[in-house]
Length: 276
Image (cartoon, helix red, strand yellow):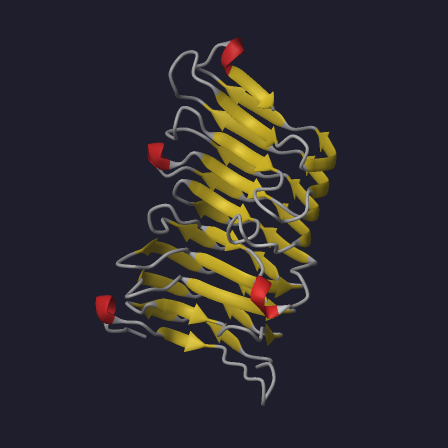
């Protein structure tokens, strides 16, 4: 599928649900090549699709007058094995999720969103009064963002959009040169972050591996488990500060940290802080 390019304001494909007909169900997009649309695949807005899947699709030159690689809201859905690399024109995120429940996001490559946007932006939609995102898995993805690689949080600091029950596991975080300042930001209840690899080479000297805690008016981040993650950096200025994990004070409660490892080869001991 080849679209009109910079002038495009439409997606190549939409999972379109309506209040009258209800949620679109049981659709799979398999091995599609999509190029030069505003958005590759969209799941409408306001009514999540159900039991749909996007599998082994490739998205190229996505972004017109607006757009994201994949713009998604779904229940019992799967996004598996896709590649989104490079958002252009007025495109934004590689994957933007506005509501998801019982979904799997696995084995995708999400690289090079637009400036200041994310490889994955995962939030809720306050205005729709939907069940908050819950029971989701983000597993074994290859992620390269911009300033922030993956944001799991309300869409901005003025939105009270609770998120809960997610597993973020075995993902490969890589920086976009010196632009990247943080790989992962988590604000939600009952989240598990485990077995991820955070590569920090080539990023800003003050790069943070991950942070957790409230960023605005949403509830505090509680019942967070951070297990078996690896933070690695082999470059950087001597004495520069590299931080593996940041826990925001007063807004991060009931946290368990276990078996996390950090290795920085070119900084002094006073320039390394694993946890703040």
